[in-house]
Image 1 (tube, rainbow, N blue to C red):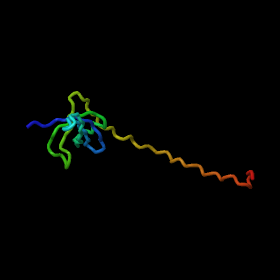
Image 2: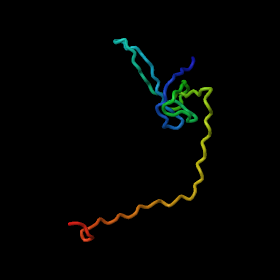
Image 3: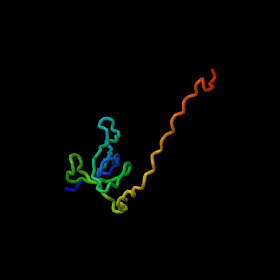
Image 4: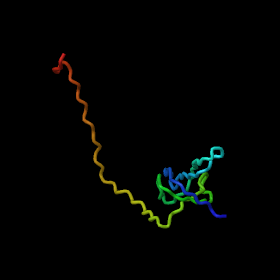
Length: 115
């Protein structure tokens, strides 16, 4: 049996190696005979953390990968490869934190304030 392939939009990429994809479909209302949009969210596996919120992706059914994740993101053949992450820069001597100047005392009547 062929695996299902759906197309949707990434709505969340907060998890590591997982994206949440919203798939919309249009169905006809049984009474009003008007087309209505229905959507469902799927958790899909994104091995390289390549996709971010707002991007259109295609997902394919797969074996269960976790409790609620049994879809994988299909990588398009023309997509550029993801470069490896750069190592963090070597830490240099951090400058001392800036300190605020002490508050000045409010002028008092003795200091020449108008009465």
